[in-house]
Image 1 (cartoon, rainbow, N blue to C red):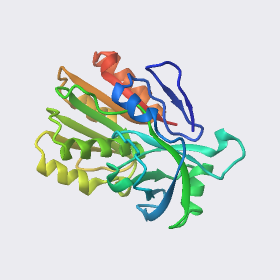
Image 2: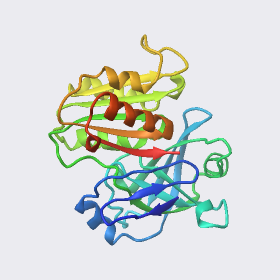
Image 3: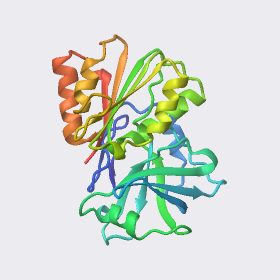
Length: 272
């Protein structure tokens, strides 16, 4: 992944195979934590779990003496042995957990003709070490805890939201209302379903919505757009989007032009 810091306070992140683009104010605590971070580290693969033929979870262990200074929502960047040039080797993936005990969980999708995902699906083994840098990124929770959150994602775009949501509830951050809207094609590809269902049963301020485009689910079949459009428009709401470009483009247009949401209240991280 090629990271281009375009301005002091804003960043634009571009990935060849399909990871992130994000533009938002970088809080000072993120700048300070990352200022002294070692550039590259090693991480050992300690477990691999396949959800489907296209989705897998990879668990990595990092030396506990290394301070990763992680903020939920951030990503790490690998230097993989899949090419000679930097742009061919670097790939970035969101961290899907809270990074307890320096254990990193990643949620990976197999991209057609993607060299990085092919490597991570077909060539890594438990015990192998991967070279990475980070965590990095500015797609994180707002400091204003009076905001309502609408988190909209497709596929593995749920990964940064999972780390954020678990952090919110484990540290009791008092966001008034949180709606997670997840979209994918088939029921078999609903990621972390049982976990989010359980959170709904525990926390009254958390709602979980699923949109399947290829089969019905709980009486609905379609895309994420119809679901967030049905939510009541509440002032003081931040809309956070993570997924493929076509979803992001349509959602930003719908929210800002059709629903009249102020553009400053719509932030995103782009896959692809």
